[in-house]
Image (cartoon, rainbow, N blue to C red; front, side, top):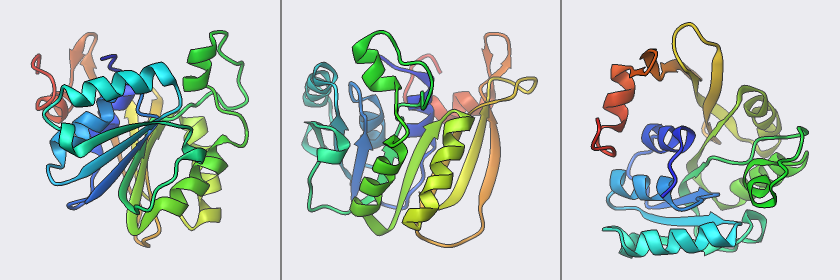
Length: 216
């Protein structure tokens, strides 16, 4: 399975007390969904993927995992996905090149490019399928995270937590992990550093991922 830092960070930091149903939007080959299945042992995870090849890979990865009875991959665009479930936890590592140059490779473009309407459509769908006390966690570059948060207010989704991710203490914020919810409350904010020095992970990063990677 292809593993990227954004995805594993998101899957490792999301928080929700005893979720029954979880949805992973844009699951790719299923890494985030499998990590969530490991973390939340009583939850059922649906995973939606628009790219057919990746969706088929997720189906196979789920079937070969210890969590096959609690995971399901669906080949679908999120706007076309239908369900009667209301999810306690929704997560996404979505496309993020809004208004930027399209990726020349079509399949990569599907995964990484979003037009102006993408975030509004995503939020509309999340608002529709999110349980009343559910939360939506997403990871994005700073610019796109700002656009998402700005659009979220129209769907009564408020920022409950924001994690600013930096490569190290000398670098600017490169990603933001945002938790949106209908529940009102004070916004929590923190900074997370991946590297202590060149090629050396921080203790916080190692502790966060030690249950998922043998190298840690």
